[in-house]
Length: 207
Picture 1: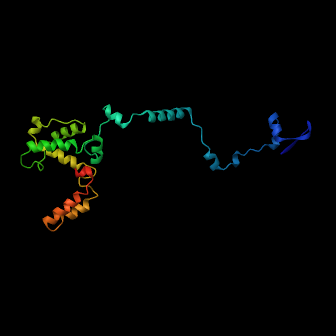
Picture 2: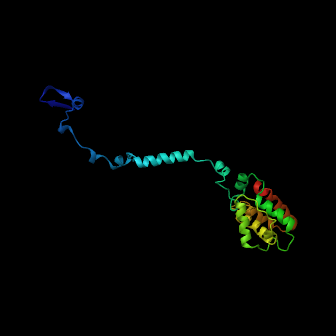
């Protein structure tokens, strides 16, 4: 675009006039109304100072937060026992079998020579006390009189643990195979089939 000026004989380029501050109005056209909406929407909006500080704080917090292992060492984070996947629980605890099952079965083998040990229910409050202690990563003293006099609460706690497993002891994946095995015609055939399916259990469930 070339412009004529009364003060200068030869025409001057537009960029020269811009540099010295002359910008004739006849060469200016506003284009705001002609810009497509999609273009104006795609232009990022500046972040306010308040939101910028919040984003910076969140980034710093996420980078500096302690690991799960450190939280466990400080006693802030505790792993669940009941309702936790069997493999995950054993991985976190470092045990081969859950401590709750080990403690309860040892107690029952020693003191549970009574009728209906895994059939009759114990006192609900005793069961909840035991559950709370195991969930708090403590090993309760099962030889206390309260439990000796209510041995059924220990058997009930074992059943509660199995009942709350997200994936059952015999696993959802092998359900059909176990169902077929127990439907075998003879006891001998049933035994062979069940033994075969048990060998297919994941290691934590097999143990």
